[in-house]
Length: 273
Image 1 (tube, one colour):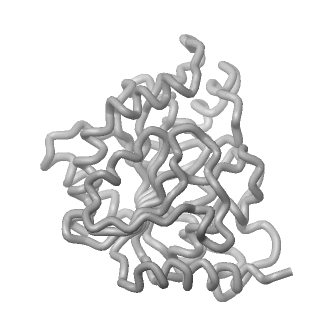
Image 2 (cartoon, helix red, strand yellow; image 1 turned 45 degrees about the vertical axis):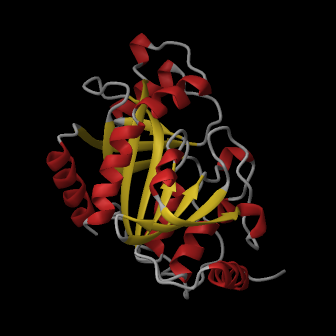
């Protein structure tokens, strides 16, 4: 079986055959948050299925393409759609793109997602800077053989979300007069939305928002020494005692409504990297 390192190298070389420039940041775009790519200039688009080793996004709101170009004067590569554990992919596949970004010498990565708000002080449409996370997915992308070329067997996670980037994000929010929440993101496997009892448990354990992504990517990025900033768009209120029925279309709709301030915030953050 071809080793993981060879697969990463093959994907890296393919992307470099399209664009061999140096990147300032990678951006992972969550459900309903893809329209920021309209602000990327001099775009080059690569379909996931064309990149060796890449899975393919199967979820509505995830286009499944890499966008390379300039955003606010910085060279970026954006994932317009991500890979989820609940789609049936192995964790190695879920985080494969992150590992390729590190192979491209990218040090800064911004991960975004649509999430349910468990903190009663939140409102649908709020943006939350992730300060920490709880991994309730029942697995970890680093289980199995460790490749020392990627990172240590037992990586530190005491500052999984880079404190300097968090400070930068709040400063950008203040400058733009955008209300920003902060909190702990709890990751579950999905694809079912949570029961009231599960939400009650996650809230007691310290979660402020809940979703089905991001944490594997953040673990893999930290394993390789990348600097991570996480932003959740609160698309619905996941309050156990007042839980309303939810479907994916509502999540996408709310994320779309919050798009303008999300785009403005990300642009300002990238400008100041």
